[in-house]
Length: 347
Image (cartoon, rainbow, N blue to C red; front, top):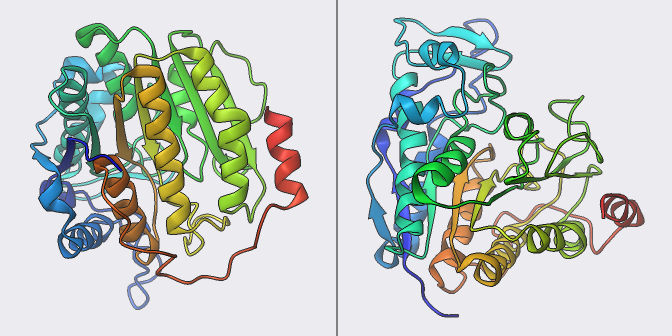
């Protein structure tokens, strides 16, 4: 495997965003989306030695004008408030001290990586930031998401960096409803979402929704590596090839992992590695290898660090740290007929 110049964006200031605990004080159930997602990932990256083979990139705050390329000005103003206590902005979306700073850095880190890739300074990039963004619509935060970093980066790349056609591949276990809604009537941005059927939001992500360049692949619960591989072969790769992007962005949510508490899929660490290999090969074929991944979901502190490491290893052209799945969950073997039928319906 050839080594590549891979940029990595990671900034501890993204730890400052904190979602509230739930339940009574004597129980205090921790939130699913929390700083430990990044902290555990970075420990894995340090321990593996991969950091010696990537270029660390700074996360700078995104300019307000960039945010307003896809978000309503009133929405941006609400997110940038720094309240003294945590307040609820939408369904499963909260804002507290440090949230605005973290959200700006997440989007800004994505812009930095995209700018460097388009300029040819690096081959590809991975933005490990939080909060996630793909559920955030133009004027509505939801599902842990405040600002849609991938959507902002796609529009900014078009207007400021000359990438006329942008493809967004979202493999988070939840449908990328915000990204889809933002670009619903725009034929210059292709949105492809692989997700668990009717999970979250339960009323979005169906096959054949109205729009200019939308591909949804709703998959049944329990889908594992083989089902996703078939979806890439039959739906994802043909759609992106036909679209012919100048830039490929990945909404890399690792919550399809077998141990994730918010999904009911059965993907392993080698599965995430295989997806990334296919995405990189597709980018090399279609757009000179220009691909940037942004961390969306993924809430298993068992699987997320190893999956993120596997993704970064592929981007950087490094060998795998794991021959198999280090978590060792029981997963279905092979391809089930229900998965085959779901993929064929989307093809």
